[in-house]
Length: 76
Image (cartoon, rainbow, N blue to C red; front, side, top):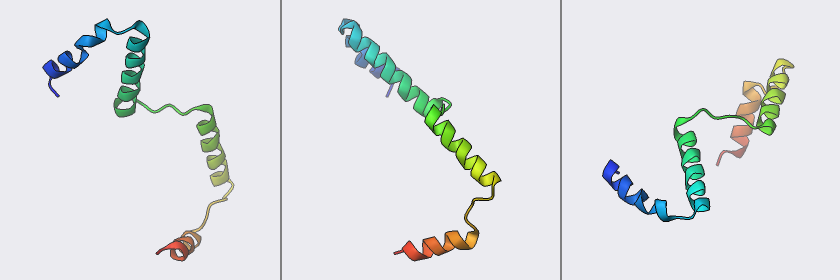
């Protein structure tokens, strides 16, 4: 899409209600973050990563042969 095309598309936004304009800004920010930004973990994701790292330090990982066995079992 060209700059002119975007300008034409966004022109009516000025007449939208403030709530709709704010919603558009939030949506655009989310799209930009998704495609250009750094992903930020939420607390639940951060806790899951920490649990996984702790399990790794404790040696609670499947061996290569165990992983291969699971793949072989469920491979169609």
